[in-house]
Image (tube, rainbow, N blue to C red):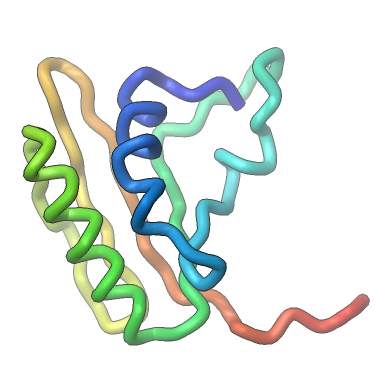
Amino acid sequence: MPLSEIQGNVLTLIATNRSPDSYVAGATVLHRQDDTPRFSLDLDLFHDAEDSVGQCAETDATTLRTAGYDFSWLLRTPSFHRALVATDDRQLKIEWAQDSAFRGAA
């Protein structure tokens, strides 16, 4: 999926906050080819453990605010956080969610 300018900028900024237990997934990854007709309006970040959802979301929020982005929380639960990030006339929804640490073979 072609990334919008704000998606690319945000991903670059928060890349150092990712780990094997905190990763980008969802439509952004599934449709990552430049020639796909589908664009995503958000970023989905998944975490293996519930407690890392909030920790990582807070770290990303600090990173983005420090970089000058407007940042506002829309929803925060132990296993799911949603925020709106904006700069100039662009905005982006980011979601941090818990995923299972167990991935069995099919």
